[in-house]
Length: 281
Length: 339
Image (cartoon, rainbow over the protein chains, first blue to last red):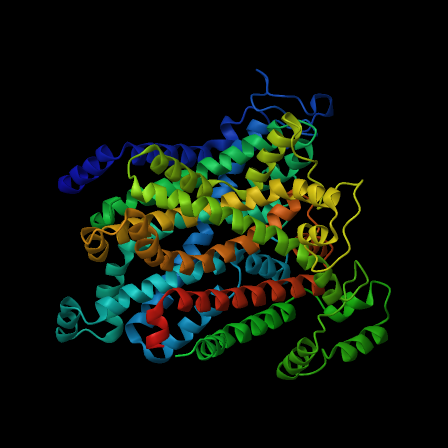
């Protein structure tokens, strides 16, 4: 364990950016958990006498068109944005790695079906497919998660397939087979766990993309309904006021979104350094 | 292998993709919430009228039969009718597609024009300020929400500086559009010799094209840099240098041509992002393209246009990938020989 810790310390010490990203990630998680309690105002409380106020000591990030506090809304929205992205990535990670590992390990029909499905998904421009899925299944939050999960699925499936395929004929797998394990047992206990580390990196990089994607869908009016605070919808709210100079309504939620995505991307790079030293940049 | 044979073979490979797209759009269409017949009949319809519409739409038949009907309609170019505009979806899409394509192609050209030199410079001078600039551009490009970049640009260049026109479509209210030839305002106005319309449409185009271009620039610059670094460290480049070839010849004739291969492959992914991001940029800049058309329809629960849009974008994407494959064959002689 202490060796592991030393390795973590070495990699983090080598790359202060990773440390910064990790601290930022912790901050985001804390905000997601504690957001509603630290928010200075009720995120839904409107006060038209205080509408469209620029940032001030009372409202650090200003107020929106119906007088809601922008800072409070951003803080409260953290949990929702993170939850959407996490659940979407969890679904595509689970399903994708399972399907991909089976395809790579068993080959034959399983492989053909999985490859065909992932190829079909990839035949669409992914954001357009997400729009189509939400349009077809209905404009709800759950369907945003499903759509985001589906368009991420091919990346995990392909990666897991390649990893399982490489390991299928390796010595330790042969040994596990000779020791009397069944096909499913070999896959579940020996091949699959070994495919996971590179997939974790993918998941971390993907999280940023999933947040971006979900926020983009709500920016165009899908999924999250007003007045629910969510970063994408808040930027959409502020978009109408940009041309008249009220920049703070769109800027701050946009910055929050950007920081979160940035953080996950850096974290993914750092995680890759930790797990796969060969690809260190 | 001849070029025509190569192209034919790639086309055959693209077909399963197209079939998949048609099947998925059909299934998505049938998974619609509620009864499409009741929806088309309107709220005041009698049960009898709904039943008639159901027969007219073919909804009373089995799923495979419906699929055959669907494919037959598609083959005739019939994408249904938009309830909001009252026009056929095909006419609407055809009228709006040039706007989207003009925007996408301009932004792609812009991205390539900046990202390729940036990537090459960064690879030939690792650790220099160009390299750092490239890293900043690539990291920011993948982290910035595209709608947010667009709004920032509008705020700075329209509201603060007043350099850009209001983000309200392809032309300002005082300029009349040029006579349509291919639908690209820049090309049409140039053909008509209409300098006023050319300048006006260029003005309107700059900000949305830069927004989309910034987004596409990141992966291209990143890949160019990485591929160039790899190629420059390879044996054949060392040999070419040792043989005394001019640095320029080594860099552009030998290294760049090989480094371009992964970049061309990446273009497929870039197009996937661009076609999706187009929707967001069109919303921010009130650009009258197919994306904003689909959005208006989506918000009004008008499904035929959305479906037509998805089908158009997906087919376009399959065709673009086909073009990229063929381009790949042109650049890489090995693909042609091995087949």
